[in-house]
Image 1 (cartoon, one colour):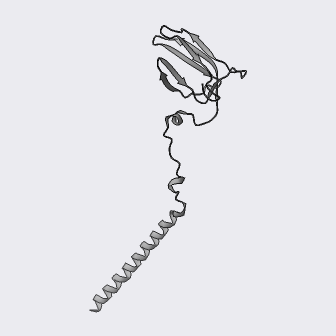
Image 2 (tube, one colour):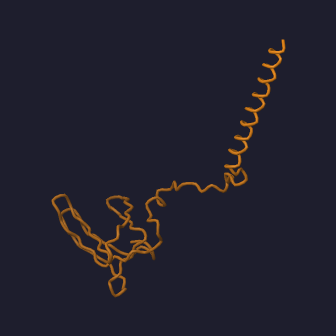
Image 3 (cartoon, helix red, strand yellow):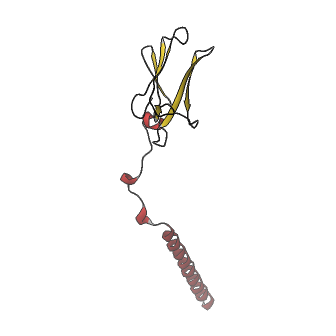
Length: 141
């Protein structure tokens, strides 16, 4: 009977000891996560979803295009836009009737001297009446 009571006491003390360790670990884990600094839904920055915003370059720097060439090829015509530093340009294609339009955001046609210019090529290949490259606004060709 004494042995049985001793086993119960040892079992209770062990259980309380393990419970104390578990509570201490839980408290330590809770301290790692600062629940006060969780942002609300309104504070979370949502990803871009509009196509116009996705194709724009991440910087607002306007790239200077200093030369334009229209080179006929076996498959059509290549339009080459040359920049001062060889920067990559983003292109946005669209059509209006039989007119093919390419917008180039964050770019401007500028001679090395800084003067704006317009490029035009009449009948560069059969079936193409003309190619015109011009500044659309202060940040778009």
